[in-house]
Length: 610
Image 1 (cartoon, rainbow, N blue to C red):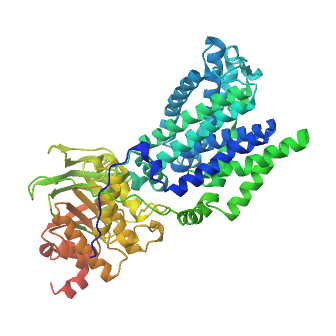
Image 2 (cartoon, rainbow, N blue to C red):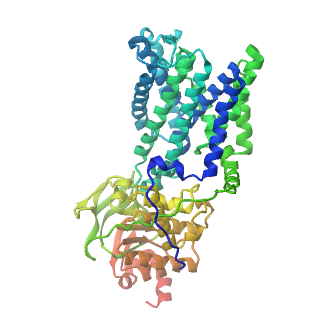
């Protein structure tokens, strides 16, 4: 196997993540962003300044929404609730307490974050359209509350912001000052989005968006990660709402808590490219000027025209460029920028930190199941399954289809809670513990693959492996270094920059093993990792599993390839109809009459000369 040298480089702090971009990319990005400021200021037109203030506001709102809707894949259609909370909080603090909006906007952001947690925690348990509907419902509830408390909020009649001119009150006679603040807010939201995209949180959000079960198996607390995203997104959205309230100077519930505006904000990200940093800005720059200019030129006769413009652009983009503008043209632009002087350079790779040392003498119990029962209604999938897994062994599990093997895996990795019985693993301090969640099992050292491979398809091979490495190595550069070493170990180094969805089945099986191995488990659960592979790939997988065991990792493997599992296993457990019918040395188990009748058949016995 070819050896690839990995050199050391200093650690990278979160504040330096942006600096990792190549210099041409920085220059091009700054030039593009500066046009948003220079064009309206150079024109001197109040209307054009208004248009660009609107662009900055909606681009910032869309960028903030993209953290939840794009990176995490949670389609929130009630996101304007945070905008309205920020706007009303700032305006009411000015009206009742004469508090400057520069402080009020922080109070509004904190309140929005708290509301986001209260709403997000139950809502994130919902899936698909039910989550979107729940966000719409909460938006409507908050709008009705704003109307109901009319003595405090002004109700449906609206609320006028006290006009106190000056920077302290964020109200100006010169519109250019509004543009400076709006542009600053846009820069902040883009910078936060960029930092997240290059941090562990960003990778985790994408993993949750792509495959929640695989993310759990990698040790990711899905709900916690989503809540972190909604806190950041809600605060940024509230900041923009506070500023926009000062710009508009008049607030009404129908506008501040508008479902239509929530959909527009999401649409800008969709047009530009969901889950990308530049997508929301690009989508806004494309659509908002068209609508605003049309309304400016046509006046009252163009009432509602912006909706037609938005809908037309959205239809055209989704039909012709389903990945959005950045998703479609971004790689092409990136390659062009890399050809500029100084482009295409990447930070040197760090030396991979040492893997976690596996402690404990060989042969000691490391995982114990006792009387496991799993019932689905009237169906009993496993019945009184008791297995003791010993450190540094390979335990093979065989049995006919539907015998309960994968159900057993789900029980000992936390994806199912047993109807009765217990699962205990050796914890970090040597005591037996019983985790209750998949991410809890992962942190306790239990890693697993899936019978049907679950790659994070839009991430590269190396990024997939990094998702596993983050469990023990939170730093991006450390995780990348570990992932490079694991990719080399499992034979995926040459395809490390290929998107996972483009790998053949053999490569996907290896990728699952690699991602799990990068989490440095003490127990590795392999669910039919040799299924569907040719003989060469099967033999390669057998050698890989042996080498993993030789490092001290304990392996449990479900397999139907009898030749492979017989040659690998130190012990065999046979399951039929949810029960353990045989256990012991492989050569003895295959001679067991119960095993022959339930699974192997007489043809296998004759072929093997048993």
